[in-house]
Length: 340
Ligand code: GLA
Image (tube, rainbow, N blue to C red; front, side):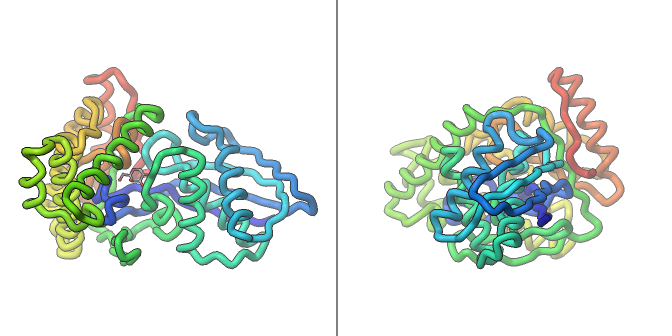
């Protein structure tokens, strides 16, 4: 019996930048997905789960996707019996699917002695995700699930595939509250649309990707197409915010980190148009708590979770109170994901 696991991910800052060859800063959730696997002599795959996987997709699809990608890449695997247990909440924008893909790939790597390093494993997981889900997602989630550890963030430069480990100081606690809103279908269509808009903007500007765009380009594009110009402005300013955040975190300047997190939310709402009212209400509720520095939606948007930064010792109380206020203002039930 082989046992492997992988975490969900929460992105501190750098949203909708990964598919624009930009910068992201994800870290691992304490919740993990566990896979226990016994190889078989035949080619049959049998999997049981504790019922935690995303509602919109059959988790069996993910298992099929992963085995398909491995087989296609020429890795010799046989059938297996596997059990999946996940504590990563589905539909919360914390990439429970990447956690499953990476945990399963790790178990298969062990069981069949596959030659896959952690980076290759992340890319295999990404291929499986794209084929299954049909959204043209970037590689952040699978890289984070494969490489990140609790207590540190990964500064990933998507253009150079360069990864740097950034310690999260003990003076900072991360708060994540799930809005309880799952918007998978709308999200998939809107996600692909945002991505197509970014590609179109880069094409009009004559750039290889929006990684090369500047605020000057935003000005140039605005008279032609105001929507595309706003998309570009988000990507340009968000990459800058990632750089600023890493510098401020290193200097222990939590107030500055919080201001950048707030600015990220505003940009995602106003320029990238991926927020919804409930996420704005939840972010406001978090911001008004004691010891909180900044709050923003995480992941693709249109639902899922809100992240906030807290002074150490303040996170649990702030999350609980904000979730109560969210419920009284929206009638929706929020779930505290972090701190555990
Ligand atoms: C989803 C995708 C990621 C990334 C984020 C937005 O989580 O899977 O690749 O694009 O949205 O930052």
